[in-house]
Image (cartoon, rainbow over all chains, first blue to last red; front, side, top):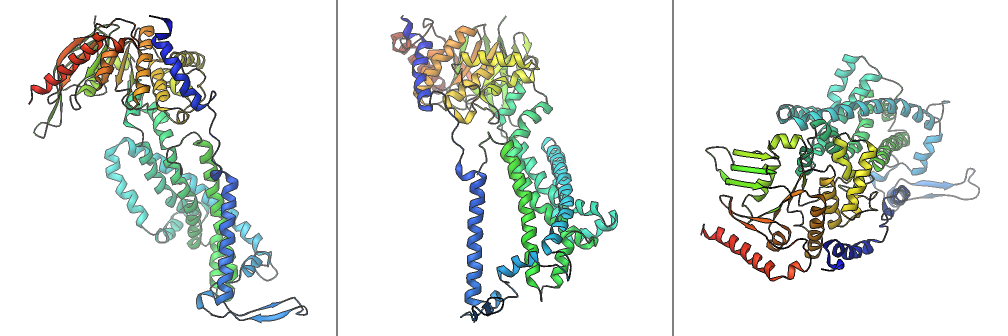
Amino acid sequence: MTESTLPGALVKNTEDDVMDTLGADVSVPPPDRSRSLGMMLLRFALVFVFVIVLWEGLKFIGGTPWRFSTNDGALFNFTWFPPFPMKFASDLNMPHLWDIFGAFIQPAQRNGPPLIQVLAQAAVVTMQAALAGFVIGTLLGLLLGTIFAHSPLLERALVPYVVASQTIPILAIAPMVVVWLKAGWWSVALLAAYLCFFPVTINTLRGLRSPDPRAIELMKSYAASRWTTLWKVRYPSALPYIFTALKIAATTAIVGAIIGELPSGLGEGLGRVILNFNSEYAIRPHKLWATILFTALVGILFFVTVILVERVMTRNMRKLES
Amino acid sequence: MSVVSISSVNKIFGKPGENQTIALKDIDLQIEQGEFISLIGPSGCGKSTLLRIIGDLISPTNGTVLVNGKPAPQARENREYGIVFQAPVLFDWRSVEKNVQLPLEIMGKSPHERTARANEMLELVELNGFQKHYPYQLSGGMQQRVSIARALSFNPPLLLMDEPFGALDEITRERLNAELLDIWSRTKTTIVFVTHSIPEAVFLSTRVVVMSARPGRITQIIPIDLPQPRSGETRESPRYYELITQVREGLRGGEGMKE
């Protein structure tokens, strides 16, 4: 038998072909451009422009008549009468975008600071409570999910209660929490946590059970402890599931904090600002709209932060990405 | 002393009184040091179940399984075997090198030793240079070789393989068969190999264990006397075809007993 027909040699020759198709130094595939942050922002901006055009287009066709003019009315001055007035496009229901965005720089109250400053200060207060609630809710969710994943008995006994907890409207329990904990920062954080822990619990449970059963058998063959298996296989496998939950939790934390602020009578958060402008809506709708936009921005900020952390932590995982 | 000693093993799935399946019936098998044993049979004959019982991933209903003279659970605790499944079961968040190092990490080896050992193993499966790659960047055949490197990383005296090349195309499968024989002759590891491919079983093994289904039992053990080392020439020798025919008839005989 000659050297070249030895199994090893045979393998080597043919295997080179495989390596060739992959490139000698098999390079990492180029990052998917459509998933880069820049593209994400661009897409967001495009949709934003589309919404602006749609909004003002509707106003142009069916809004309340309005006047085009320069300040003194010298250059041009005429009134536009939309051809098909529609109730939902009136200035009360859909204020002009320049009125909404203009509201940011106008004083929130007579002789007060501009609205944007009031909102920013309120947002900081709300975000602190939301962040604390997010962290507490996430930790609680991870803990419960981990316990349930290891104990089918506890899972069967307690998961129905976890589900039931979410069917109670948060508005119903908010006053109770406020009474128990006294109106304050902690009661707001707790209400945010109450909304956060549920998706995290359910997805952690699911994620911890997601590994291939053979991966668990493999760990068994290494005589790995439950704890080692949890850290080295179950948690990493659960990461995509957990991050899906964290994205939901990030936005509900803001909602939870704002709703928590309503009955607590706390005057500094976004909840109180919304309440104030709610009562003024009939005369100054653009202020509430501006507040809504700003609140959405705060939620998006939370959401994007979670996505960035996810990108870093799951960069080599392809499972469940989409 | 046999590496694996199985005596009067039965495995019944399902609780008494319900629909019970007899997966394995009266299995007796001795596997000696350095052997390459293939378990072959129709699906449902319990060949994978037998492999899992040897590895203590499931327990037999009754009978004894000794690995290197110790009960199977103790052998598992001592990390006396490596296992390779049909799917590579690599961890996507770990690089190739870190995947191979996983068992060593769990066994508390030093980082230096882990790296050295992983490099050695990747050299063995001809994947040197792929240390920093991630599983998704490799082809199916390459992934399976990483899985073999991982199973051998802690130098287990016994290698259990459950249809490891079953999901690969014929060309890759033949190539990896040759590579596996090369690894086997170099490491002197005893291998128990589950397959449903007759040519694969004949080409690789020192003995082929033929099983039949319902209930799963051993119908025949065929020694493969093809000369070592085996190569592409082996696949063309008349003896190779004779043995393939013999295994095929053994399988048909097992079925015939039922029909």
